[in-house]
Image (cartoon, rainbow, N blue to C red; front, side, top):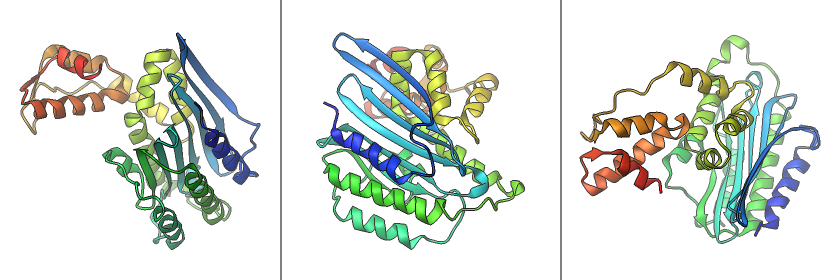
Length: 302
């Protein structure tokens, strides 16, 4: 059952961002797949603002069992405003996916204000943390993270409100377009790094590909990772110009990949290749298997 706290998150987001975006001024992308009595659906709404290249707000349902909302705010490079990220989903309150963070894209002194907010909320959340390295790669030490553990929704709403208000008041409102174009390259690279890591590790994208197909996936990718700097352009360029390197032997552990396994990996969407490869090699090491075959990979993904 969909949690009412998801709607409360949306209310907080649009209330606290009044004047930054207009709630009813958006572009919407959606897809839905019904199977028997279950359905999977995603609704992306994208917003633009004076100082942000895109705000992406997603509401999703997976097999009528898991529900969630996602918010990512990408600043225009010339303003140097930190990224804001938030996700709440899973089966609330028993198995909660929760992340919120303010992520700098330029080097700056330690922000004691956000550190104090983090300490305040982390004290009451004893189950914080994630074993997934990619989450730690994009988040800061002030991120509040919960991966599939019980968590009181009211604490989430309180944390979301304080983090979002702090992002707005400390960063967005005072920001001026004072980063010259010639100095924006590292800022752009940091935004693209965030988008790239998120794109390559977002399990939802693989679900959407299976449910909605490649054509809809292109729309979803553009909605989630477009705007300037646009990861979509990078994805297309890499897809057109790159080929998978020879992977018959992993240089670290000597695991052999069969030709059929390599072909299977090549045929997989680019954003899931690294995850398929890493999972297969890790499992092969655990089982003492010296050659990865197509059948081995297919069995892992069932």
